[in-house]
Structures are given as structure tokens and as C-alpha cells.
Image 1 (tube, rainbow, N blue to C red):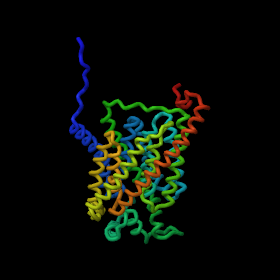
Image 2: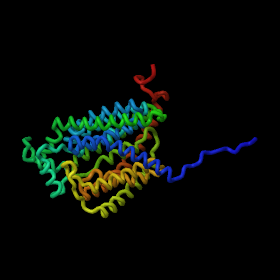
Image 3: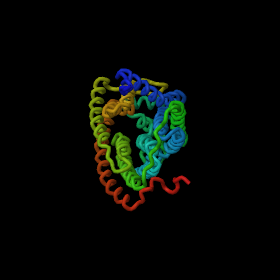
Image 4: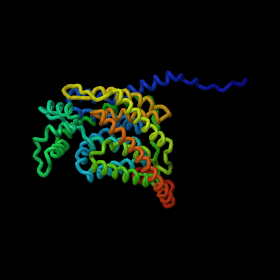
Length: 403
């Protein structure tokens, strides 16, 4: 008896969207929950660093497993205060970026570069524009500077503290900014915020993926890894130096993200992802401009004594959930069109700052794609030269080869 081959029925689009939306809500909630709890406890905006730690932990578990997630969460919490101090100088910032990208490149030999990639990408936030600690007794002065002068919270804290700085050879405002980055208790709290956010995310993800078979990391040969490591190290370090040397240029993290995400291990350039990234980011800038026109100027609301542009953050949060939902679809340009305004609004204190951030994100993506494409050509040539001189079975170094 002949039987017709059976195929599983395709799920209705509505059911697929509902499922993706629920997953997106859970992931966004997992990223926000540690920050919210820590913010309530400390009443400090720097508690939002827990969300960055959570994001690092989520990707590390998804790409490398629970054990890797724990290790990456610990490393991120230790690197975060170093990133803040390194940001005092373009040389030290670029040097730290070199160390981080060299580690990512080395881990490509065992297929763990994707699991650790968010560390150098997201460390650019505390390195370039660290969220400050509001000293006790300065809350009212900071609120006044933000609401009347439209300053960011970093500049508002620095201006409020400018009269107390004692660093010779600097202006009072510059001295206050240096003191913020060098304060030991602040740096210890930053490490704690990153660690708590990362570990909470890893623990939750451990339960979420316990019945899921995660894809095994794919090792790469030395002839592929060496050009890849050189590419990401040189480009990311140069970008870090540039943005630290030009502090008035907003953003910066998006250029480094573009470099690390688009650079491939091997001889291929991900044209589809590059096109989706550029088209989506352009669309995202247009979406951001439209949203800003609707939202209007930012209005500040005291949240546990800290002035915040709640309307901007609320819209950014909604767009962020929609972006994570779109991330699960094959149309990546939709994700970039939504994540661009979401990132701009969640990292801004005024609508003008959000607009500047969106514009810079577009420039960063265009420049990043051009740099990665250029590096890909050089990598292709170097990889072929190394392949002709390196044995084929060099996927593992002697130190990592099974004994």
C-alpha cells in the first residue's frame, strides 16, 4: 500500500507572532528585572549596568552553554570597572580593547567567539560614557541641572561636583569627571551590578534550556583564526581610540558592534546581514525621527529621587520588545529598523540626544560595513597564504587538542 508523505502542518502566523512576542517579553524582562531591583535598592542609575550583564549572560549561555555563561559573567564583572578607568585615555581604552578582542579571536579556535563577543561590544558603554554614581546630598543639584539645562546625568553630576574637585592641572568640571571614574566604591558597585545581572540571567537560562539541545561550538583552523583575530583587533582598537579621542561624537558602540558582528571567521563576507543591517538602520533612523515628532520634548519624572525622561524610555521599551520579537524572524532588516530607535531612546535623556544617537548609529554602520568589507578582502588573501603554509588539521592548538 502506497502512502502519501506527510508533512507537519504549518503554524498560523498569528500563533507564531504570539509565541515570538512571549519569548521577547520574557527575554526583555530577564534583562530588566535585576536592574529594576538593584535600582530600587540603591536608587542609583548605574544599576542599569545589570541589564548589560544580563544580556552578556544570555548570549553566552545560548552560544556556549551554562558553564561558559558563568565564566563570561564573572569575566564581564571584572572587566567593567577596568573599562571605566581605561576610558580616561584613548591609549588605555584601545589597549583594553586589544586584550578583549585577542581573547575573542583566540576562542574562535574552539568555536566560542560568538559566546564572548558581547563583552568587548558592550564594554564600550562604560568605557566611553559611564553612567555615574550620584553622591549623597547632590540629588537636588543633579535634578536641577538636568531639568533646567538639559544636561545628561553624567554631565549633571560632574557639574554639581565641580566645586569639590582637588585634582591639579585640570578644570573643575574635568576634574570631577576624572574623580567619577576613579572612585573605588563606585567601581566596586559597577562590578557588582554586572555580576548580579549576569549570574541571574545565567541561572534563569540554565532552567530554560535544560531540555534544549544547544548547537555545539564549531572549531576553526588556525589559518582562519589568525586573519580574523587581526581584523577585529585592529579595527575595534582603532575605533575605540577614535571615539575616546573625540568624546563629543555620540555613540561609538554601534561601530564596534558592526565590526565584530559582520567580521566572519573564514573567507566569507555576510552580504545578506550587511545589507539588512544598513537598510534596517536607515529605516530605523526614519522611525526614530517620526517617533520623536510624536513624543515631543522630553519631560522628566522623579523615580526614587532620580529624574528620568519616562516618556522616552517607555516608547523605547516598547520598540525594544518589538525588536527582540523581530530578531527571531528571517527578515533581519525589521529587527535593525526597530532596535535603532529603541537603543537611541533607551540611552538618551533628551529627544535631541536620541536623534543624534540615531544619526551616529547610521554613520557607524555605514563606516563599519566599509571597514569590514575592506578587511575581508585582506583576510581572504592572508587566509589563502596561511592555508598554503599550515597543515590542514590545525583546527585545535596543541594545548587544546585531546590528550
